[in-house]
Image (cartoon, helix red, strand yellow):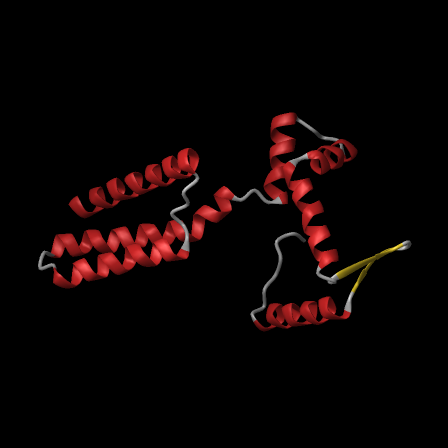
Amino acid sequence: MQVILDFVVIFLIYFFLQILLYRSFKINLNKFSIVLFIVAISLFVGFYSSSMDFLMNLININLVVICFWFLMPGIINHGPATEIIHLISDRKINNKKKLKKSFLKSRVGKAVEKRLKINISSNLIKFYKRGFVVTKNAEKMLIFLDVIKRFYRLKSDAY
């Protein structure tokens, strides 16, 4: 019971520390170097420790840090899907045209525009009068990603 209680306390401390540091000082604890540093310190301390409870707490700390490393980017970075859900729920938009107009004015819509400009400047997409055309390098990249998708049998949840 004590290990479960310790795990909950460690989780809550790390969670609130993560939010406090990110919101107040824009310090992200989810950088790979910081996660590796925390795990390395806990392995070093655990190697010289003789207490079994202390080792269990170190394992819990490492699990919490690694779980947050996987989960926090989805919470911090708003993607197009979460922005659409936000627009529908908060602004009560139920019309497709209004939703499209609001989405393009939002920060995610602006991020899509920036990404499009980056793709055009890196010669992955070319813009002609008739519209966008994918270049040969981009086609090769898409073929490579398609091979990975087929190899691992990945399916999008979008359809």
